[in-house]
Length: 572
Ligand SMILES: Cc1cc2nc3c(=O)[nH]c(=O)nc-3n(C[C@H](O)[C@H](O)[C@H](O)COP(=O)(O)OP(=O)(O)OC[C@H]3O[C@@H](n4cnc5c(N)ncnc54)[C@H](O)[C@@H]3O)c2cc1C
Image 1 (cartoon, helix red, strand yellow):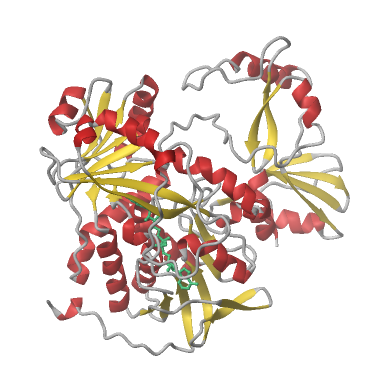
Image 2 (cartoon, rainbow, N blue to C red):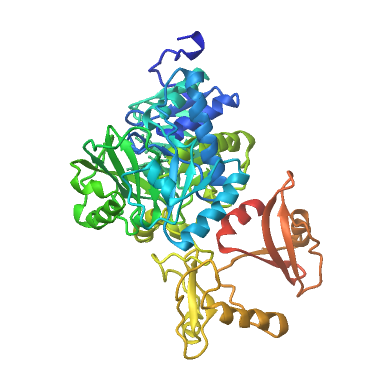
């Protein structure tokens, strides 16, 4: 091994201060440490309460597959796959990556349409995403039942990685770049002064830090509480089944994802690993994570999971005769909207969070580390932060009952078709407007936004306010909504803005302050509404809102409900 791949000798002396302290030695913490050193930050200390990977990372199935989710998700995973392919050369630490390919199955016309749309987007992002016939699927995977398949979608360059080895490669790269990693070092407190983080407390000593990053995975909410920061995530049981060796199963079989059967399949020591994204999940440790939980496994709930195992077996019928080696259950953290919680906490300056990876932490870990490092160094997010910024969360989402209820649904959403008018079904009826009963009487179909019950459309008299079936085409409510739309353009409508974010700006300088941050001129007569953006110095858009002049010295700012925290921060 050449000099450049040597890991610097480990020191066990905790420093009394560091520029950046990272809490948590899973894939995310190690990736951020690695990427910070790439940006020239050497004074980085990572603290892990047990051993590296001891949380969720050690037992991940290691799927690293690119064409899923929105554009940012694809970019995060594409970057991660590229990093996985190159980091061994840089660090000398193998990652166990195998480019066995990734095959998604479309078994309904709606899935087919969705995957074809995804294919267009994926190809635009440089992914080699090929539609193949059921016969070609059968050729690749002779053990699969292909009777109901309309098409397969294949990415030859994707594959699987050993999550522990990848994390160790990141840790090694971070150490080579100057970062220091301490295991068996639990963070027990966060120190702060005047709304700014100042360091962390450990049983060994206190460490002063300019920046603290919470990468504690499942424990992210607990660490958040130490700092007075809302980190709304909840652990849930997450499963895969491991079989004894099966004839015909070999190491080059591509990974299959079968959304309709809530399952994925890949080879593992001559047998199959069958993973699950069941639609009704089991939240775990709702009364707190057991002390000293490290490299932990959970007792599988066979009764709850057996129906899903049965459905998965229909795809690969030989599974019915295979010996079960293990039904593995480990915890993973999920967030209310299925997006990661990243960025600087609105409640505490210089306290960053990167947690709640919704079972995508390995696959997105490289990209998350890169973005977070850039965010920390530059002070702003280098990509569109709409779906990842922790500032989108509201205080009510930290409520335990809310998180427990919502987590039942979020795990399974990874494998569900998300139509444009999708609304969560769990944790509903939390925030109601004063008009809710009247809306219901008037035939409202309610959707949900940041906990509010919002009337989406109104069914005419005699019709039930119900979506008959989701689809990419026109749904049953189209005509009802078009009536509303017409009334809005040609007549008069009344709109309930209860669920929107509202901020009053009042005082002698109100006009001056707002004209300083609004792209449009808000020096308008009382009673006028100005539609405007708030722009940043990089030409990006921070907010899209209306400003209403209520009096000479008083304005009302209205924007989307989940922008409240972000807008307040920008205003301040
Ligand atoms: C069964 C299963 C299969 C999965 N398969 C895949 C897959 O195929 N692909 C994929 O992309 N993802 C997969 N995942 C998800 C993936 O494993 C996680 O998203 C990822 O490991 C999360 O990494 P993390 O660094 O955020 O958390 P963790 O790995 O949990 O790391 C957090 C660390 O923080 C430490 N910590 C906690 N509190 C403290 C404290 N007070 N002081 C110091 N340290 C502390 C913990 O000990 C832990 O090591 C799977 C998950 C499960 C459960």
